[in-house]
Image 1 (tube, chains in turn blue, brown):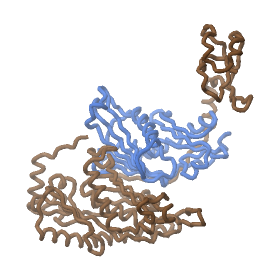
Image 2 (cartoon, rainbow over the protein chains, first blue to last red; image 1 turned 30 degrees about the horizontal axis):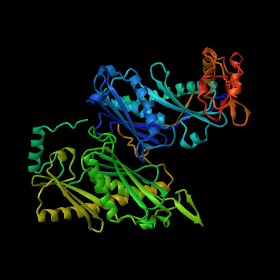
Image 3 (cartoon, rainbow over the protein chains, first blue to last red; image 1 turned 90 degrees about the vertical axis):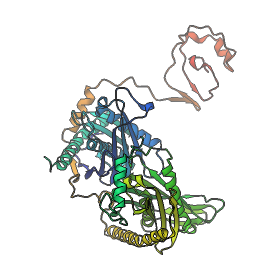
Image 4 (cartoon, rainbow over the protein chains, first blue to last red; image 1 turned 180 degrees about the horizontal axis):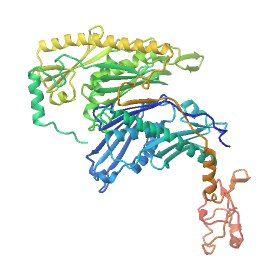
Length: 219
Length: 389
């Protein structure tokens, strides 16, 4: 099952606002279509002795759902985000400190994990935490006809055969983290990876434009 | 994280300024900060900003069995979540004193004042009632959480639409909430926060002012100017005139806030009727330099197929595939072929085998036997392959 020709693979409109909360060191809201997430970053700050690591900072990621208390699903998503952040942050610059990243779900209309990743990256940038590269999240879905859809809505995700989220880094456009659900062939996986790498270029351009706009009055 | 202490000079500066009737942000003593109410994409979701304090409330509902003591009434559940996002001192999962206090106060105001008619939430008496759950998430703590949380809860409840229920005999069908308008309109209660610093009275304290205050007076009032609840904490002794003055201030403010709430609800209703998109995405301010929006873009897919097939071909051959399980007899699954026993042990402890003594005595070590996964798992010899019947 191949991608039929070059179908219109689109990313929904996205938007971002940085520094919207006054208490956290860095905060950002990221919107993909109707999916919106609010992220806040604190750090480097005091760490509990039990969680202290002697040569690195301790990164904590908390995902808050809209209704109810965090459950296993949130823990799984937290792990995905944490591993991506730990790979990109320069943790050894802040030993025996804590970095906390809190993600609040505002509205879920599909592609939620990639929205978490994008919001996380923008919040970490806003907090000024040193990173060796930026990262972004892209979600792909394979629908019943075998077509690849990027940035699916909740309705599209429900009807698709497989949903995959990849975290892509900005330096070499390689896959840092992948989280998949459903069944798909090896070929389809590689095609989705290639599509995500292409889509990530757009997102990184958006990051650049956001930051340029932000510092336009200073530069 | 531990709370950073307020330095003495900061404290003295604040108290001195309040004594001279000056506040940090230039407000008058009885002034409220600017309040903004926006709504989310689904019904029952609202954001309230009071100055820099930000709170989000979400109302959800489900059908449950009612409490046994009250079979005709629905259930209301309130929860204020002090998210670690709001302040570095808030911890996930920890029930801090502040969280208990806020939850208790919100429950008291909204439940005991009967602003929502719980009997109207009943679907089938004694069997099915609506459980309405209000979750308030504090996003940024800059003082006066109680006020904002209660306004958010009330606004979200006003905005919420309960799905329509149709009952046919014993079946209860829930229809999606697109059309049904929830008739109840709570008689907007507002909790009004006043704090005292020594003998000076401040309305709507910000976070710094809250740190230096001595005591707190909370008045919950509805739009009919009836006091629903009043709470004084901090051990400060108030004179009768002071309490009366506070309630007068409260009644003025309540009418202002109720007006704002109604206007916000109407604007949202109009926007939804016109079919425009509404929600957090739309309410993002465009003019700020810290905000940016990109239109829907398409992704180029020109060489995707080639790249993918290159990767697949360049990759190593996949590991040896195991054939799917075969079912020779119902209840027995068989995967692959068994291997020869390499333990080199004699067949001595056969007494443990409940059955198949006869096949054990057949001395089948030398033969290749088929490994079968049996439904009965009471055999301890799972490690000894090739011996089962």
